[in-house]
Image (cartoon, rainbow, N blue to C red):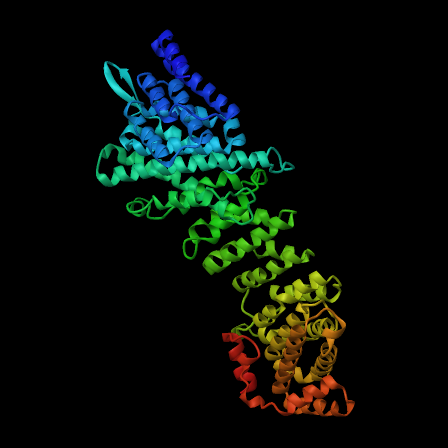
Length: 599
């Protein structure tokens, strides 16, 4: 092999030496793969001779051939660690004889070779390591100078670095579908992952080199270029970082996060003084292309990317950017797909919690949420109801505020009425579970005003207690919790309804005791539900003890084991030692109501 190569070099013109070397080398690689023979010549020494043969060429073709040869050597053959270290040192020295302009153009050629990125991950990884080593070996001044051109008798450098960075940044853009009916396929995700890994690692090398140059005080003329690159790279990396760290995005790859975290760590120090308002204004500007009304569905990760960014920004930094992202969030809510509605509602909940009330009142977007309460999707109902409470607390006057008396019917009442009407005629277990999950929150926020809906509320709660809903009994647990809040908040009217409440709880005690023997419910759930019902009985007794004693005495002669067990507990329990916080979680509003009700 070596003799053939030597003879070939003697017969080739100087400018053809590189091409001939690489051709022979690649042929040698293929032969080695086929016959699996032992290498008699040192591959590293051969590669050194390839480098020496093309050092003076400084052309895109020669460098492309060299990088291809080195990548083949790294990805195809098994080499000792010492040889790989020497190979990296060789790459770092390429900047001594090759212009950065030649390197950048060569990398652009490789970036357009989709076959390399989509079919051969080893080859793409090898190219990433090689280019990374070359940039690390060269200085930032070398990257900036590019190639020389003679203009009016003077030598000037052409700087292609900003354009090169723009090309890399484009590879970080979110995947775009052909149309709304299209779906992501494995080839698209594989291509995106490979090119994104390469782009992030190379951008990391460039930004590290620029920051090192900035702190060393070299080339003051490069300062504006450095900050321009930091802005271009940083904003795109944040958007890309958001898309990869959203758990819902299905094309994120395990190779991406550690690269992005390293890239973001490079931008420190003077950046905060250069951009005192941080990255958010830049990110919000750059992300607009993905979340416009006309094309946001063409980018599957756009909604997750936006919500991840917003959810990681806290008060007070969201206020000034409300105009930038609120229209997109409301567009997601109005979409016909439940998944998009849920994502937007979760994001809107974070916005409500972290934006000033005055700003929210100015926009008054509660109607967009109110329109969603008529949809019968369990997953949607679970996230919608807490968000409804939060937005109504901002836009409506507090039902608890005595300064608003006499109180007129408002959106709180309309929402409660709609929920109770939906619950009353609902037979699907999943929806009944979703409706009951947050019912106690509505009761707590309504306060004493809940008496306006007391009859309907009790009718729904007591009817739900009669139905077995599966091994976990989640609905009954939720309903008992709501009933506790109702007894506390509407205590002046509870004596008028104690009869039906007591009878419903007594039937529940009878149904629950022994349920583990006839159903798949575990004994732990049975005991927990029984104790929860007993606690509700105790709270009812604390609210109106005299009436409760009459009903309790009337059950003694029934000789029902479950009721006898409760009567024994009732007689041996001193309710004076109980505080309100023993029945429900402590809250300011609840404590205030109970101090008035049960002092």
